Length: 208
Image (cartoon, rainbow, N blue to C red; front, top):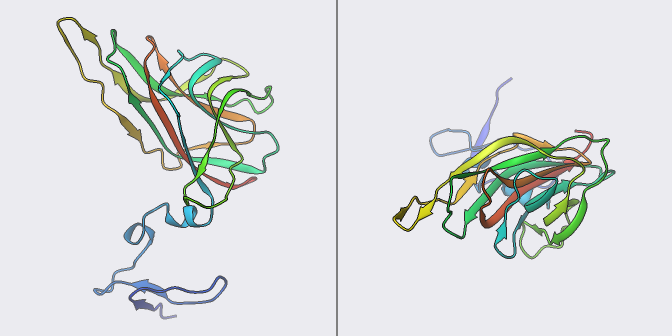
């Protein structure tokens, strides 16, 4: 069977059949070559984002977490597919430290206690899509979380000089999925650090 495509922009109605899209040199056009890898998910109201509303001191891998916590509630019917995590320090540090993602993955554990909730936003800005994911700048986790993904090593500052701590965006790109009653948090290791944290994620039906 001959596989054909059509050169130029193609827009079709949901459920209709259409040939694939080609570029002027016969190359296949896919999402990353068009409006970006997250466009379709954002357009359909599946992608959400959140960030601290003020600078926040990060806890040290603690169940009494401060920084940024993203949790998926029990019975949500969704899985949270992590796309990005970010951290930007706001103060010079006085000792070496590290920032990492910490995980609570016991689906039988108690629920996260939402101490200081933060409003999440849809990636389709201005739309009324609501996330099932819950975000907090402070929360009580059901147990001490496990460090699963380092993000950056922090610098330090003294009277004699300093080592710059850069902002970082971790492109997780779906390599971490939160099932119902699990949580991920951005926390520090060894020495507290202050700054702004962020998450971007997509929500898909569960079971996958």
